[in-house]
Image (cartoon, rainbow, N blue to C red):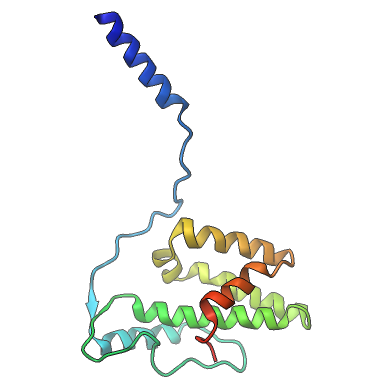
Length: 164
């Protein structure tokens, strides 16, 4: 009987030791705040974030955040900032795609602005590590080597119609 218990324990320990490690998120994401804002507060959060972001020449932010639909809705804290960062990010993606062949130096500046999204609270808090941050970082690395594929797809899937 003891031999069977020891053998089972040894096999279990061996199985655990041989299990490959799962890549962990280097920046564990915070649990959403669950603080809700009135439409006016969400719009103010949007405006406050706009003040921190610079758009490419010729672009301008919409007066109201795009997700502001109904004056009776409530919005999770971060939605206004997320709207502003999304518009800013898409503007720079479109600008980089426009400039990458005709003006390589200006395109490099635009690519640096795209990379700066990583410094935003929206990226750090709201962009899922595995499904958004990892592909973004891989796409950014490819773009730095001249491959526009990720940002072409990004502009079609997430930016078309949102930036004017």
